[in-house]
Length: 336
Image (cartoon, rainbow, N blue to C red; front, side, top):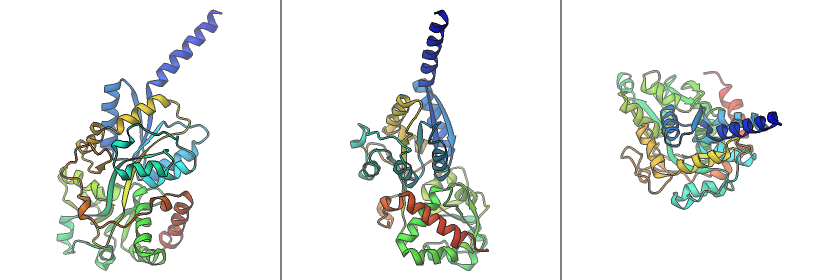
């Protein structure tokens, strides 16, 4: 009898300990992930276990773990993979009471996913460029997508691989919507000749440009100011002929082992104070909470020419798989 009681007590204690843990896949910059984990963990007395992965890698992990989830929350990264996770029943339906405090685009992301994800920030796709290298090589600032095809930029551009990076998939989907699919793939074949490397992570190219390892990156422009603050000669620009934007998202994983703590973290992450933390971590996306203070270094969306990005179509699993497979076959397989 005593052994049974002891076993039950240990089970309760184990459950209590487990309930004070949140396992997070974090798909934003490491500085933001770590700051968020530290601040929330200390304030709430909760242990935050953070695994940093690009959004494409995160989705692949969740698919692999479907029958035995090890993740409670997936924070950040482009919205398309979050929508695909929702479609594949990998994330949990949860309608936050905070939804009305969010911008319309963030609410639409939730509605579109049947409340299996929510928008937490938005950021436009564009180019990063090393000002010193451009001047040294006497190259003009690229202002349009066509400018990236300049033969003088051969081997001077980095972009991530769309199979592992939501940033790069956003590029593929943006070009298809901007140009039409046939023309977009012809464009990417030409662009391929100027690419020095397809990185695994979407933030890799702008970090490389900042450090002089490449001249130009195709990146989300909100990743630029943090590199500039760190003293690197980097500037960003959005293409004048039109671009897309990500809706960075957050999802609770279906089968989360620490569900109640995951919901508390989720609600906290939607508050103005939590979202303003991004700028403190040198991340300059537009927060989804309408009451969050916007840092002056956040891109001015009113001055950017956006396409009418179809998040529903390009967030669908089948469309993502099709476009990535086509990119691998028709673009990535070509010699450079």
